[in-house]
Image (tube, rainbow, N blue to C red; front, side):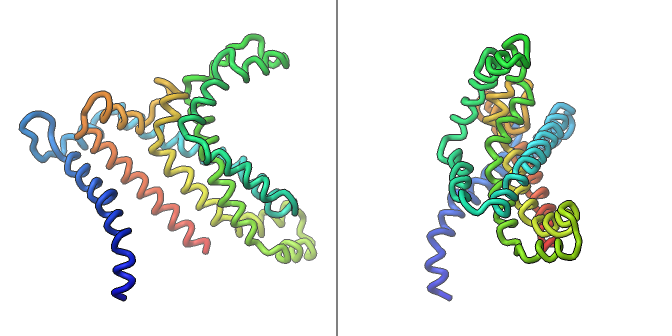
Length: 273
């Protein structure tokens, strides 16, 4: 037992010193008032809940995260199913193509969409040449739609990989047994495949929804003013307005939202096991 404690102590020290302690410091600042004579107060939290702007922005952030999660799930499930059950060769290549975006910076990927979605950009010129649009003005960039597109691109691989892992574990003999008993493809999918792959869907939803709540790079770059979310407000408080106390309070409100969503999804995941 002592050897295990000694082996774990360096990692625990790093976790405590660089993760837990800074969190408690920020929690302390979130209860401090502004001004030279700082005192402990709840005014930062009261300010957040008393102003409709922050509440609307919070709901907008939750709604955007849900939309991104839903789109990722709809796009990822067919691809994961084809990789797990429909093809025998080329799985490793497809997985490599899915993982490749992780090798590039998240900031670079956001700016690549900036070039792709801008008016007169690659997408606009292509659609115009196909006769699908009359001008090269798409009107997508610097809107919530552009931020959602960027976030889907960033978090899509997480959903694919988790659903693929769940489907890969599914025994093909169960599917064959369902078909031999007279169940059609739709019935087999609804009663066998989908229920048994729910743990992968729920895990993927956690890995997509939770980071989306705190994202600020893609909404800032692709959404502009219209793409403002709670994460961009926190960034502004720390780096533009220098309202560290209020920014710390918003950050902990966001952290509580993350913990609640993770707890709810974990309960769903445990029920499926």
